[in-house]
Image (cartoon, rainbow, N blue to C red):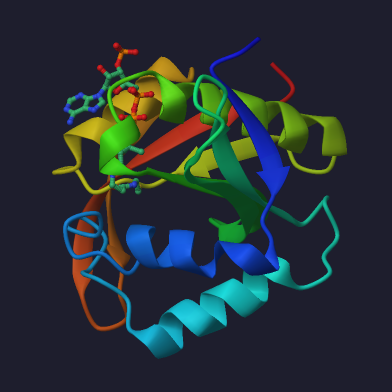
Length: 168
Ligand SMILES: CC(C)(COP(=O)(O)OP(=O)(O)OC[C@H]1O[C@@H](n2cnc3c(N)ncnc32)[C@H](O)[C@@H]1OP(=O)(O)O)[C@@H](O)C(=O)NCCC(=O)NCCS
């Protein structure tokens, strides 16, 4: 048995989303808590029919307790003239520091790799987000350098550009 298992994000997961992207503490490095309208929009996007070669969104289940511990996903992103994957992760406070984000990232990378569509997986955590930068390192990404991203719209955030070769 692994640390986690991934399950497709479902209609019943809105309360979990609210505890993740709707929570100010969880969103400290991501531009602050999302509004109910934004959560509803995100939930609709996550549960819409989709092409797994373009995007994947998963509920992360802690194998030890069987409880939902967080979210992980990948999506397509235009980056310096080519389409790459970008990924993100979020783990509830009670489940942090147990290797759950690392395990979820590794499984998601395997899912994206199996699509055989894009070579590069990127992640762009804020330079101030120590935990997320550590997840990138632990999951095998290489640090390319710092960049400025506009996130949320109207705000410039200094981020690290981490990249992983899905063909490597
Ligand atoms: C980032 C986040 C998902 C990490 O989840 P987690 O399950 O606690 O991470 P893991 O236990 O898998 O830890 C992975 C690595 O990060 C390190 N780490 C975790 N939290 C850390 C912290 N607060 N400070 C420094 N390092 C940290 C771990 O030591 C581990 O490194 P190691 O493999 O070298 O020992 C979690 O803190 C979170 O949800 N934060 C809020 C949302 C967020 O910022 N998401 C990222 C958006 S870019």
